[in-house]
Length: 255
Image (cartoon, rainbow, N blue to C red; front, side):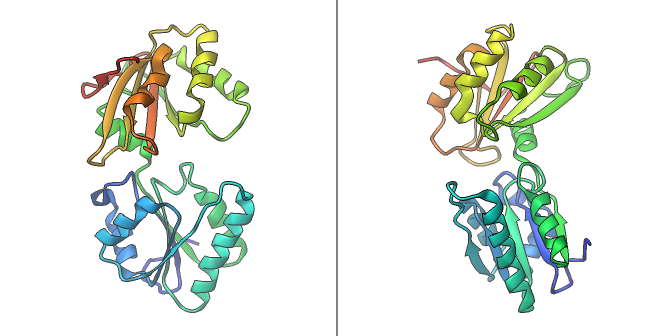
């Protein structure tokens, strides 16, 4: 089903990376620049569109968290389909990578069911950008043989997931926590109950690749206090692991 972006009637879903527009793939930049219509839902994507000097019509989706996600997704796909049917080159932009916690697969499945041609362009996911820009040791030889990306806000009951994470952290594994800010106390308390030491290393990278990037180090016991140093609404990835470390990290001082 993947098509060349040169075909006018192919719907493109593209990841825009962690925020720095220079981290776009060449293919994504070309798709944005040649689009007739760009559909997106994250405000931070707008400077990506500006960078590509796109003259496309912009359609911003207001993602109301009180609405059913499946219903909203179907409405977004219908918007793509409606513009596609008029002969427009339609590009759907997502932060990071569309298939890494970005519902990319769910959207392409709906396009497939509607028999609409589509192409997917990868982007750099926030976890990898944070590790690289924050110079975080996550997978050095003989230190960590597993890296797990965990979307921490998906369930109200985190018990079973955190049980598995605790087991991973007791081995040679690094865990990257996405969207964990609101449940940090729950994560900390559960992992400590699972006998992880209070001094277990943590590195947090906020706004990776952007001018306001921050890299902070802490221990598991005081992981919550990291948020005192980071502006609200920042994009933060937390790395936890026996050997997690960054030469760039400022030690966190608990308040």
